[in-house]
Length: 293
Length: 173
Image 1: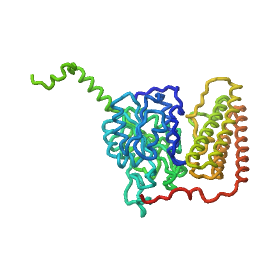
Image 2: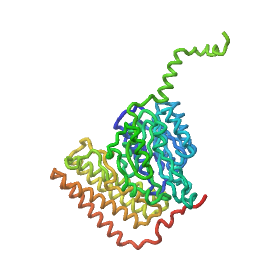
Image 3: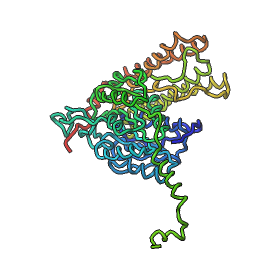
Image 4: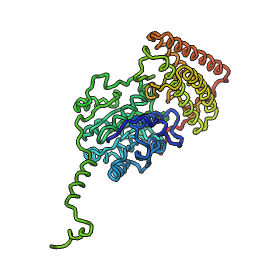
């Protein structure tokens, strides 16, 4: 994404008139503030931004953002975001949702956006539970977790979102947390500036159905920045090594940023269109393609 | 509490005043958010208290802005909101649906203590005597605010059932 920094927009310019109805104390309140700050730092006007989501608590976020917004269907934020980006490549396209939306019903889509290197920033608010539907086991719930659909404890290993996207070859992979709003905003900004598919996993606690150890105070106690560990974000294997600690440690920052980003799908499409335009028939001769010579 | 790109030890008086104004502005906005959340979740008593805090923070912000204006006019601000987080604003996770006025006041008290700690920790490193005096004044104000909130808390009747009793228990769907 080619973006310019212009200080003419402030975070509040991206705040919509809708009042969030998340539970008080929800991590998503600070996530939306982080998104406002990142967008202000990027400086694109709201009419040049499209924000797509699926279904879930966190998927309400486009409604709370002043931009084009689409609160779509469960798990389908990415295909819709992809369509928007291809139809209007000049738009800055963001997609967002929860861990259930992204890694359960929508899990199949992520790989394809990554392999195409779609220039989209995907923000997952990972609370390890289906909160909107009253606390069922989600794909990132820890093994042994007791929920209303796993009364004796979950028998399943959780999906590791960070390893998942790294394994498919995502060019930008990061993790943030409401414990550090400024850091979160900087990470989202860097993700938007990355020219290609960028993934940001945000540990955003559910205050209603989340466990004590997943709340902000507990996360604050265990969070450590990748920078403080001396991690080099250009080292993909080191990123994969660190990503394995998902669920046991909380590493914040950029796990991986491809230092030599490949062309985006949009770039390749444009190149192909330009090539084809050179040999394209004029409109009045278009049917000649179907006629025998 | 987070500060990015601000060297408290070497800040100028103008930057210090701007930082103080932004701290009040952030707290004011957070209380405004909390008040809205309480109104959305049918918790009117806590909403009223948070609205009161909005007015307080706005009043302090105006006073500081007036001083800044008298002293430095319209000189461009170098400190921005992106440089700070949660100095005096209550933590996002301090809010709860159906929280009692007591819990709302306790959240505010924790914020005033947090702000006092911020100014107290900054003080030893500050070199400029004028900035030091300002931070001492701001710290003292936070202590006064704490006393006011504590006095209000002492007047409150004890809480009834725990607010968490009203939160839905997970049920099979």
